[in-house]
Length: 398
Figure (cartoon, one colour):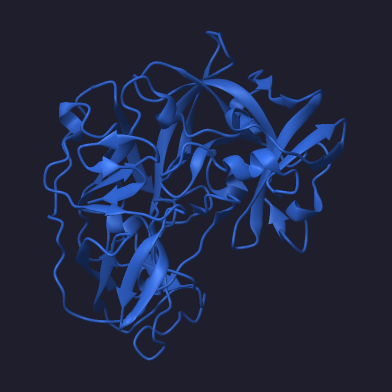
């Protein structure tokens, strides 16, 4: 999933081209076992509730502000392409969170996805615990399609269907640990016509300007120490995949021995969180790295990467195709090649495996380096306005 920073819609935009050759500048790394350090969160990659492969999950503890009555919610999608915590109301089991208001009205939010789905629900305050870190008290979104009156921007034809429950969506919630501190920023604070935030009196909801501090927040950015970004570590998987995989989400960059920045290259991004992927002689300037996308998505050549007959969104070449792209940081540097493979999605889905390095599909707009990109790499996400030995955020590093 991908949020652009000014209007801040969680969208899945993607693209590329086809090529060959090249060598990756990032070494294949092994994932150390969990050390019990406070800034570590276990990642499990398998199929989602809706049977989607390549889905990375973490667990998060949530409490009403100042309360010791808490709920640990599992199957939270780890998403480096969005910002903030969103949890289905049903997964909170009646936990009484504090409603965020503008004046006397309740704040709610609409997040549409490119596939036609979307999430809607109120913004509420919560104490959020990430791993063994101290709590952070931040606004989160409670996903609840029955809250208030759903605005037109979150209804057909703008959104074909709202996610109603975890089974339909495939997860209990989303932990957005991407490049930005809030999910919208000043654009949603100065204009009520931002199409993201709404104020609700009773069941009537209309557009609202919401102060930056009251918007859904990336909880990592509010930690007392490990707050400048995250490190995602997932092991390499063999051709044809694995039933499941385990890795680590490490909070902070260069703040602890377990998030050392040695051996990686920093790729600065634009103010929208994008960099350039160059493929087949074409530069796609709105490309990004996104653990919430379960494949590598780009415009493929139909002769080289024909679509699957059962679902044309996926590629189904008769044999695995080896390709290469070049990533370029904002401003033109650094430049690094990334080799990758695309296999036959139908054959992969027929297997007993759930984690695949060679899963890819068709899309547009920029290269979406989804979950397969993370396999066998150390991938750092540098948050805007925060600094580390890798530079000032926003940036990717791997």
